[in-house]
Length: 362
Image (cartoon, rainbow, N blue to C red):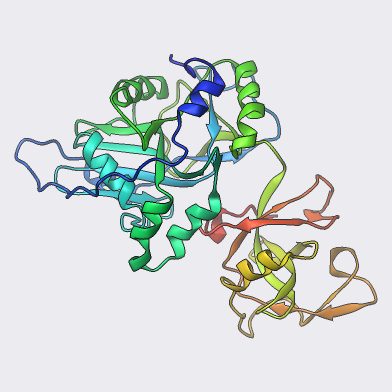
């Protein structure tokens, strides 16, 4: 099993920090004899998911032994390269080909027809991953995509191979899929990249420390002897810092200039307040104002919220209720009471790549 060649730092430095945008090639028409992909992999494609754990699992904790990989700070993206079309799909089943034409062009140039890749799309800003630049692809008008591609090209980091030569590989063991992926990726050049992997937990911990300044979120652990499980959380993820996802349910202040964010999670179908953020910076306030929408009369929260812990206390402030369809990432300590955060949260970012169903429940 190939590991991170030449050490962690060399592997990371080999990744592009601002690759020249490839020429946007024309996707070729279907050619007789060119392998296609199985219909169920033609897109959208259901992907295997990861569940969060606090501690890195032992090397023998998963079937067939554990393969450790970096957890990239990007968007999950499946590349489907058929004989007639090449498209990229989000984990929610959205066709993002028009948002990432540079990834499509790279796949056309470097990936043979009949191939389906699972991986992450990222954008580098110097020596760091820049999630904000990546988010711009999702909200920009179609007329601005070309300028964004030129200014901040995307890179595609592949970590699994779901089909090759038109054959569905999801029933094969991960170690076999990985070996085939490494052989395929040996001919790649940026912006196509192969995610490094190791079987050594000590090396994985070193990666977690060394990759953190570049914005890598943590580690993912997978069973080398497991088959691909669409829609199931069989992989394990360990973040380098304690962040979690919640739903924006309301703001203290106006919708145009929110001062604090009040967040929730669902318990038995009911949206429950689980915490509030510390005061937002002007940039954070503007970011949230762009994506939040006023809620209708059926919002379950009151029009005022207490200033004390858990939204209680004798004093209260007006609450501007918003539609709970925006996922946000917050930084929190481990102090919980019945699933509610005891201390103020720190707003990290909006997560447009996640759906409300991706937020943990209570």
